[in-house]
Image (cartoon, rainbow over all chains, first blue to last red; front, side, top):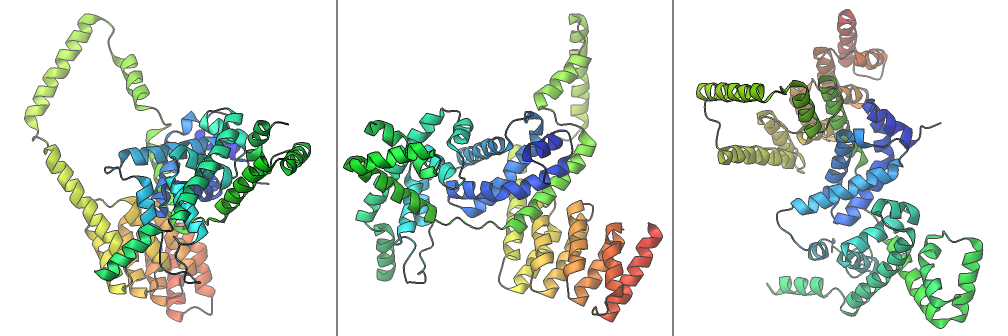
Length: 196
Length: 273
């Protein structure tokens, strides 16, 4: 029978650092997914996951007995991500950066990422207000319960539910705006390249 | 049920966390209310489309290798430093224990520290200016970046160059060690893998490096690489490699020279055990 996360973390706190290995195996994928969707950059996300575990080691003494490990490590991940953005020298708006990021090489059906529904929604998600995006990512991809998200964000569970609904509406609005002007940025830039 | 109450339950409905009764009540309301029906339909569609956005696949193997390096260092530091303490707590604790309480004694202690400081200050060279320090740090970072970038190249000769560059780095970071381990494990070119073994010798005091060498010894198929790894584990007296060496020495599918060398390694390591 596998040892639960909290028992492993308690052992790490008491100095048995090797117990962090199984916790890395269990959590590096969801943390990577969260950070990669939040930053829009997988390489940055890989670095940030290492930083999360570095902080777990560094601040292991602050882990409270009985506290839910998943919530604790995700709160560290949120801080790591916030620090990453606050320390970046050039404050490039994330939405612009990510709109340039998708791979626009033709897919199997000759359809570019930006032209596909899912690609446009991904871009719309990156244009969404950061706190709303975080909420949707936690609820949709990490499949965290509303109670857990509330604990993580330090807000009321009902507030989480209302905000998820609102975030979905805002995302849909951005998505529709982008659909009305389909991938103009990419098309224009491609045309410009041809002219040059 | 009012429309406002219904829309407050949409998040639970989409997440599948509504109880059966609440779900039925919601669906019944939605059937009779075009406004809520439209809203739920759009929310469901967005929710579903969100689920279709694929995530980037993590490179778990490389991430685990980096993590192992991190953990090995933490374990080693733990042996030296004891349990973690916040810096403020550490200094505060030291002062509480050692600082004299009497004002006169405190004054004398401060004067003593000042005099010692002046004396020491005269005796040592002035430290380099922050700009010089920053510049040399930048040069180090740049060299490291070039090394890592070369190791990712398509061309084997470029990767080989990257591995050689790592030898010239003054104090290479963990990323370089991890990249070297990754090269040893996965590079398609034998020469590059061989060069990575040489480069890793500098870091043989790290547990992660020795563990990687033992692991590679069990998986690598090239006789040249196997021989180099046998020498590596014998030189570093890595006794955990004994079992793998024994297997190699008895495996009839393995190159004869490698088998002989492995048997030599068993004798050698066994003798120093």
